[in-house]
Length: 338
Image (cartoon, rainbow, N blue to C red; front, side, top):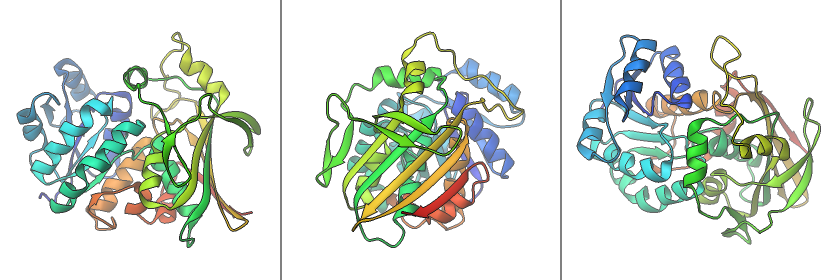
C-alpha cells in the first residue's frame, strides 16, 4: 500500500468533487483527477493545472486499476453510489488502498457494510461510506452527543436548510434510488412509515421553529452499525423540499471566492437515555461545500494513524467524533445536556 499523499478523486469534475480537490490541495495533498467523461476531465485540468488526470469508468475494472495505481486512497464523489460504489470498492481492495465516498443513499451504504466488511478487514484498509453532510455529519454529531453512554433509547436528527438548489448529481441520484427509506425502530432497521411522520423542531436563529417531516438519509444505516439505540430517526424542514421537488429550481450558484453558495444549514442531534437528553448542534454554509472538509479530514486522519479501525466503518466509529468536529473551522458547534 502506498504511504504518500496522493489521493484519487473519482467524479472530480462534479460539483462536490471540485470542492474536494480544492480542499486536498489546500491541505497539501496531491489529488489525482479521475472520471469517465474525457471532456469534463480535460476542462477540470484547465482549472487545476499540473494535476494528473486519469480517465476511468466503473464499467471497466482495468481502467479503475490504472486510476488507483500508486495512491493511498480514493474519494468517490460520483453518484449514484448504487452504481459506482461496488466497482470502486472492489478496485480499492485490489489496490489495497483506503476508500471513502459521500453517499446519502441508504441502500448503497447498507450494501457496502454487508458486502465488504470482511474483505476490507482482510486487506487492512479502511472503507467509510457516507462521509458527507448527509450521513457522516449526523453520525459524528450523534456519536459526540452520546459521549460515554454505552447506548441510547432514541437518537433524533433534524436538518434545517434555508433553501436547496440541487446539483445534477442530486437529481440523478434521486431518480435512481427507488428503495424505501429506513429508520431504526424497536432496535432494528425498518421501513419508514407511510405517510412519513411530521413534527416541529426549534433551531437557533435564523431558523427558529420549523415544520419538519421524517426524511432519513444514510446516517440511519451508519448509526445502526455502531450505536445501540432502540430508535433512530431523522427529519428535514419543509422549505427545501419545495425547492428539491421543483424541476425548475436551478443548481447552486457560487456566492463567494471559494465557490460556496449562499445556502445556510443547521443540523441538531438529540440523544435520549434514562430520562436525560444530550444535544449536539452544527451550523454552517452550503451542504455540498461542507462535505469537502468532512471527507478530507477523514482521509487525513486515516493517513496519519488517527483512524481507529480497518474494515468498513462508520464515521463516528472510525474517529474521535467530538475532536473531529471541533477540528473543522467551517462548522459552528454547540454541545449541551438537557
